[in-house]
Length: 422
Ligand code: NIG
Ligand code: FE
Image (cartoon, rainbow, N blue to C red):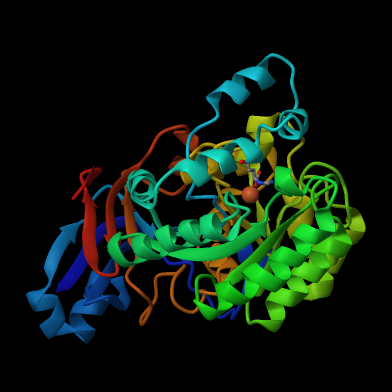
């Protein structure tokens, strides 16, 4: 199928000469074409430019193309949500209420709630029920303009359930329009049954789980919750190095609640990204800049836990490539709205409108090792495109707390039209 999007007020292409994640002022260069058009054939973008340019260069394609009129709207790459705990059983509104009444996130977790509560529910939920629940969540992501989602396991903490989570993600990758990219996170918490024997559990992850994940090709990335009271930097390093030896790229939940040298560790082990970083140290930020580690910042978690926001402004100024994401999970960030998270990044992390667009498209794509395929609008890339019902990109964050997604095209196919899922 050939599609021509035309008459857009603005086409935000994010195309530029930089190869790799964008840093510093590159993050503000979003390459806007006014009155722009996009030509799509099959699953790919053929060309981006003005209608006149495309009609001249590709007359026969433009002739047969089905036209999508974008008058009054803007067009941009599909959003990439590069850090979620997508597949999980149950919800935890009860804990949210406890936190509003004074309990802390870590108190609740140490008392057997938090990740442990979701682990119990995920173990109890059947494959089919998890699949149905997650499918509905993906529908919501898609309606918010998200075309690629990362999915971490880590609510099984035993092989059977970790595998179930990863297989649900795999089946959804095959059946749902949204692309699902899997990360193994068997080291998300120490299961209750290993309390006091933490190193034994680390051995189970390394000797029993990681080799099977690699053998069955159930994930591309390997993540660990490096946090006081969860996994130490030494244990985290062992887990990430073991994964690396099996071909799994390291990611790390670092410096989320207490400073723990997680950012430094990410740079040392050559992680593709360090995520959260609410309380990352100055030295950690500098080592990430030097190593080119992507900071995946999750302002929804700071908002929802009423914790200090990560220092996004400083990280960008220091030369760290920054991506932002929802962290969608049932405890610390139960939102599927990346647009809302983008607004928080502007309001609470000092990021500009342009930086936020880069952070949720091309930099997020690089955090998933897909920067060559998605994240910008340019010839040859997968046609993952959103039309938003605003007059210009500055209105995206100005009219806040609303979903402006009008049309979503995924791999060249219209999957949302008039804000309705097809
Ligand atoms: O990214 N930090 C660890 N994991 C999640 C929260 C998981 C949960 O509370 O269920 C996070 O914030
Ligand atoms: Fe997380």
